[in-house]
Amino acid sequence: MENFQEFLSNLILNKTVSLEYTSKDKYGRYLGDIYLNKLWINTKMVDNGLACNYPQYSKDLDLIKLETQARRIGL
Image 1: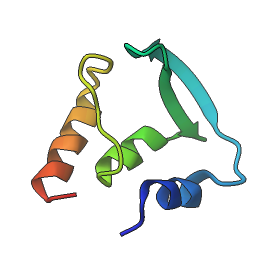
Image 2: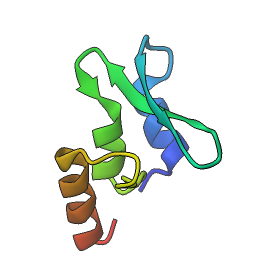
Image 3: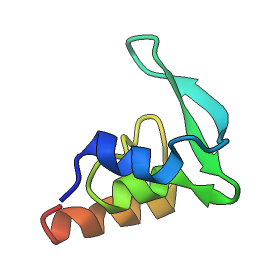
């Protein structure tokens, strides 16, 4: 299985993406959504067990569902 960096590089390296700022976390880091055209990269990362959805920052039902499925199959 690819690691986080390999997976993300394979998706977006040398491509134009758009970023949508959503909030800041408790450490002051910017949080947001990454899109490649209409593909929401965040969902791909969560679905493959390479990112988590933190409900205190995002209540998106799609991300919650994808994370639950990824955890269930052990990703």
